[in-house]
Length: 314
Image (cartoon, rainbow, N blue to C red; front, side, top):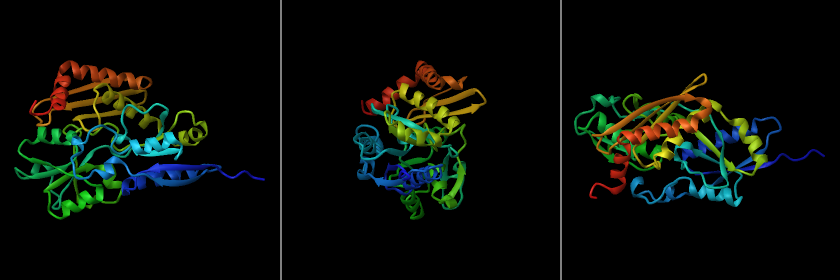
């Protein structure tokens, strides 16, 4: 008798973008020779339940991943699919990132109803975002705008723009593009003005460290260049001791065997920032991220982050 193919249970959130990511991974797995069977298991996370509070005011980290990671540790699911930028840089013991899919364009996108570019928005324009990183860099670029908190999944945020709640909103281009909601994109924000979140545009597949059977399937989905780049970026963020809700930005690029990592730490009002660049070998991605973090800290990033953690009234 021919053995039945293995069943791999994929843990994911239920949002449109999370489903897109999980279904993409499922399709790629089932396209492999001798393909496993797959099924999606939908898991509600803290970030899905707490929707009336700005993310940076929610205690802890891993708002969109920890419940999925627990299901993975419990054996309820065999792999988890995440927006890699949502995944804490300290992965729980017993779990590893088994694969990183090829990255989408990592830039942020400005969405408006009239196609207005960021530099042409009127003074005092209300810009919606949930990200402290975006807030800080947008105010650094244009301190005359007003940055307003924006929560909800991608379609919800776009609807709020359409309802006139904001003059513009800023989202990751990758999510908008993947969901086919690009009609309101006015521009992709330039990297020399707004550096993206660490790992933005990349999809990570998490597995149990001792599950060699699942690893053998998942590792065939890995895009080595993206994996190397995001390893450097996550090391930068981890060394700066920042979660996803601090104004730290980073982007790595690979040219043959050379890895270049850019990083920025910016005060929330945009008035103070520390920028840096580091080059190294692709084999030393983690070390490169740590080296750039140390450089940024030595030039003032530590004081910026300390001030943010203490709060404006400290």
